Amino acid sequence: MSHVPTRFLPEFVRRRIAGRDGLRAIIGNIGWQLADNLVRMGLGLLLGIWVARYLGPAQFGLLSYALAFVALFAPLAMPGLDDIVVRNLVRDPAARGVLLGTAFLLKLGGGMASLLAAVAVIGWLRPGDSQSLWLVAIVAAGTVFQAVNAIELWFNARVQAKYPVLARNAAFLVCAIAKVALILAKAPLIAFAWISLAETIVGAAALMVVYRAKGLRFGEWAGRLPVAVDLLKDSWPLFFSCIVMAVYLRIDQVMLGEMIGSEAVGVYSVAVRLAEVWLFFSAAVYWSLLPGLVTAREKSEALFYERLQKYYNLMAFSAYAIAIPVMLLADWLVLTLFGAGYAGAGPMLAVLIWANLFIYLESARSAFFNVMNWYRLHFVTVALGAILNIVLNLYLIPRHGGLGAVVASCIAYWFATHGACFLYKPLHRTGWMLTRAIFYPKVW
Image (cartoon, rainbow, N blue to C red; front, top):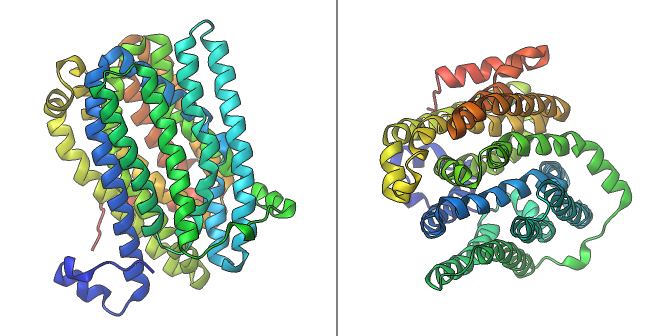
């Protein structure tokens, strides 16, 4: 287990976790996840600022457009399998070889489908635009190598985030140095797409090294058709949920690029980058608390809902702690970090940062859906949010540009996470729990 070094914690926290090995492991795991994301997001933000200043709004917008476009097809690489595989590994660790082997093959096939689909659609959407085609093709190739991330699922199930964190950060730091070299060498735009692909490949190789270093063997991996069928049967609602999630998280940048232009995407992407840099916390907490929620429900319903409410409260409280200062400092942050060329991103950031409240809560609610096996309901709520986002973007972008896309996103995120819960009776309890977290996020 990855235990947190208690000497670095406040005394009242140390008293609460004394003798509670399970809680210590969770806190330690969250610590490693946070360390990973702080390094990647913090250093990534600094590099992103440098890259944005170097490329300028138009070229940075084109790169951002390619990244957002590929994200629309990334769900074909089956990230929806992750929750199911982790859940099954928690319940049956002895099935590691078959589960990881089958997940790897499914993800590999999905990654290839993602690459082909992204290239085909960008070729149809922008015929004759060879630069956009190459950018999308290079970035999308990374989805094939992400199949190796099946390794990470084993460590998530064991609440041992330390090992994949070390692997990912090694790859990230190598490629961060390469990005700095590209800027100093005044490299062309296409080189930054190649670095994006290289980071995925190096990260996959590092994960393989860590897996072997822990004494685990790839030879025990085995794909099994019945297991694949069961995984797909359980995960297909999550698969479609990931598709619509990608749509309502990234369609704004793609629509903005098609309706306004690359420079508008560049300015808008700065607001997105400064808002999304804070999402590391929700991801770290999700993978650390999911195994505990699975076991809590097996023990008692009361314990499960008690922990779930605490989870919702923690997410809401954290979102408020971030959103308020960022909103107040939005203009200053944009001008100081990115320069006057991106000044229009300030008002966008001041509004968009509030979307994190609902993204944080959606992360916690998705854990609830996972444990309950309510994947179809998850799909329906997210699909409604995606549809609403597209409709609002069609109306607001032509009238208000990037700020219209921001407003559309905030409304869609709220509806998909909270508002949609009151459309279906079995989700009413969840809706009221989320309401309580929004208005009274008690964390102690």
